[in-house]
Image 1: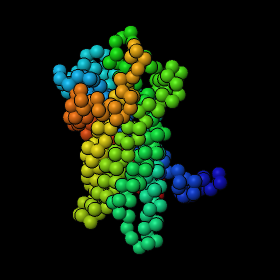
Image 2: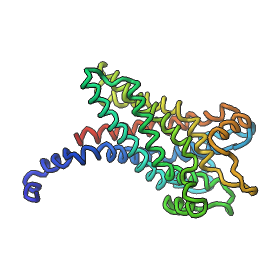
Image 3: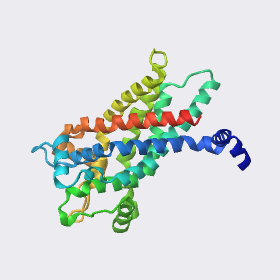
Image 4: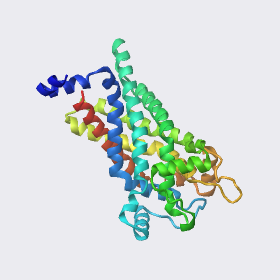
Length: 313
């Protein structure tokens, strides 16, 4: 093998990539690398999105923060690098969540494609949607602890200085939450997280796959097709998932009050209280910021994943 590698390294690489184990693993590896690349770019926007969602909690009226005002406050109280708070948790989340969701989706789609081919049919939108929903739900359960750590790290700066946890990193956050609140607390907000992921994947993966299939018959080149399809997917992903993302953020950020109780009992209780105390439109506060976070993240993730899938064929 060593001699063969010296004589023809490209052939050895191809043999390795074509092995059954690597063919099964590549969708997951490519998905994780794509998601982590996108998070490294989008993390500051995600930080601003979280701060917008937590502003004015429990108050229907009052000052309405904007992305610009939130950014200005973060920069005024610290450093530019504060916008990257929670990056380690964000990267861990992508390493788990995006690895799983893109890997599962690709695996499901290959299986559906083979079944459709054997029946002389094409994979329809309904099948794409089902694959996206299933992949998102499974991945969200696996990635919830890292997602929780990310929210805790990003919201820590909103607390008075004496009450801040000052997490040193994602590992420190996970260990302290598990030790102080119990291991099961790492899955706080799992229900809305799963529903959000299913809604996001339905909008992102199903619409991306469908848009690419529809755009193949146009005069657009492959790159233009991928870019256009990912932009369409980003919009639908944002629209369907933002209310659940909002509730997820609130549930994961909450901590027990002096009386030992939590502000929200669960997803439905949070929905009811926000509608009653803050109004239904509060769920879509920061939609533009969320779209600026989701759409480019979706575009970078899908484009990188598409490229990695192409070079590892």
